[in-house]
Image (cartoon, rainbow, N blue to C red; front, side, top):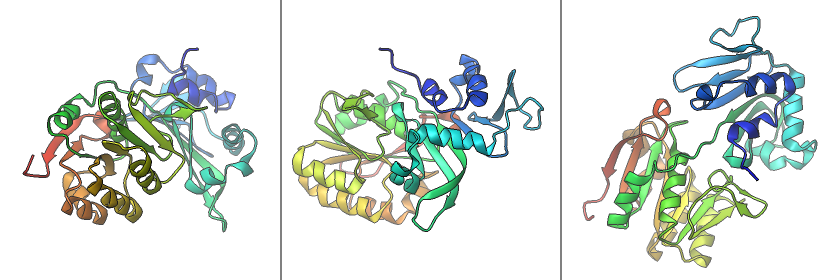
Length: 305
């Protein structure tokens, strides 16, 4: 069976009025689009690294006021939510609480709306489909560093800069030669489905999903004897505590963190603590959303390597 592309996965969750023009987008344009954004009462928008375009019945337009632009109605949002929840919205408490669905292939669907007293989103007004891509080989430069020095790496970048994409490829490369535990909290990296790991994350890689990063890190150290632990978007005190409790066990970490620059990354309280404890040997700074996955700078953080 041929694996569906992220584009095809997204199309399955769209009502016909959006799905038809979405699937009519030229393949040359699809390669550069990072998001589909649909908001009630507004035009369906496609996000490129350097521009915004809108779906129309006859192609794409840069003018949101184009009379042919596809306008999203509340009923369209309801239809998408029915598809996402398989017509059982009450069974999706965790997704409504976190504000995100993760689809096959690592496609993320962010939700906007009103948070109720139960901490769950209701009255959904907008959905943001983020297109997931595997870029095989983008981790080669960082992989060479790790192989040479047996070191830990933190990948820093802003929104849509390619942090997860780079981490995934790096996991594939290291996981083919070393024991790796991948803590994939939201199942965006390995994209496990029905007990099958859909993305290539390395032959020797064990995948933990459906748990918090902190719980996954502690579990991996106790039960999987990894040489490396991979995790995405470290951001909480619990993440930091779990990492610090593990570094004495001889484990190296490869992780991502949100930040527009090295200075911004270093200013975050959690990173200050991890950098002080020399958890990471190198910091990889990405260029940004206009050059997804492109490395701007690699900084050595320790002098003894």
